[in-house]
Image 1: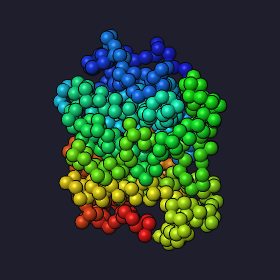
Image 2: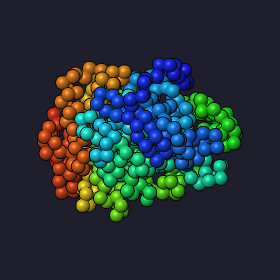
Image 3: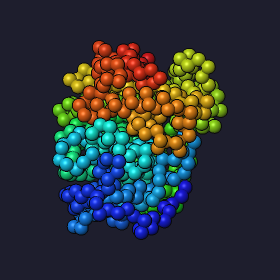
Length: 517
């Protein structure tokens, strides 16, 4: 882990005298022109969550009167900073608690009311940033004539630690208050950037997709957006109760070396990040994806699981169009390169299956082994996690929406990376270079090694243009792919994106209840 480096010398800042100026509800901004787009970076959407506002819901920003420089990204939320063998890192300094900013890419701030795409990054609730080059919105803005917004929000202990009665409040999930504040900023200001506040799509991947679903399930989420793209949402997560979350908080305080919330509030953020690494070590178990912090069902900011809420849509959410999918081999991201999982024997794998299926664990693991001939015990554990966290709950949501007036569009990403001799397959996150169609920004990521330019061009065009079509109209069909139908309980259509992109009407995964039968 490293901390923030020195900030750039102000004398090297770009000349902003000719940059576009936009008036917002908080004050005027001057952006920059880049490759035919107007770009505004580091735009505050809420007050800095520092000092007395640490572990408090997002508060209104006081605003400014002079023209504010919006040429550079703001700091990212404090997080672990290291290279990993899959993504090669999922954060970039500088880091600071004053991180509640967003970035806007627009063809022009001209009042034309273009469709709007808001991106919420993922990262296992502990990493990522709206400032990462891999999540820049320029490709979508330019190729789709869209206004694109990427959001940074609190993550890790600062966003997910639940203090509850220890802090005199029942509210938690500070991350969701950040994201709602950002969406309210979009509603109030995006028209000035050439966007249409009545045509907003929120998209996210992994934790960002879970966030999108959670916002849609909240009463105040109604009207903030009109479509959602859920890429690999971990809707199979079991969310903790307040008491269970307080136990996690107690463990975190022990790791951080403090014995009270008051002392915790005094720690510098660097110490909180170091303690997060300790939480990974303290909470890791064989066959389980390590997630040291989880959203809490606090009854205030999150009253029910997003899967349950979206599976029984209200009048406000029933008309929201959903594009939903996952990668074929999600969990190889966490397990394929893990020595402990690779060395797991049949007894250890049976024990992991027994945690989910009790006395039928060995029987179910044998079924998984038959479905993948030659699979090691560790690979069957990865397949189970893919189903439990992603595919099975995704199918459950698709089935529930399949009888509504607005069934979901369902996809599976099947392309397997040649990296690491192909053992990752179609891993978690692998669809991102294709949906954003920006492979040049992923060269640092080991898991894309060996993917050729033709694949990026063909598969990237198919996915990227489908996402653009959905943002623009609610329908992902375009001339470059076969006809894609919505998923219903009568015709269970899913688009398979791979070496060949084609739809299939065969069930894409276990239907509700099948894993238990």
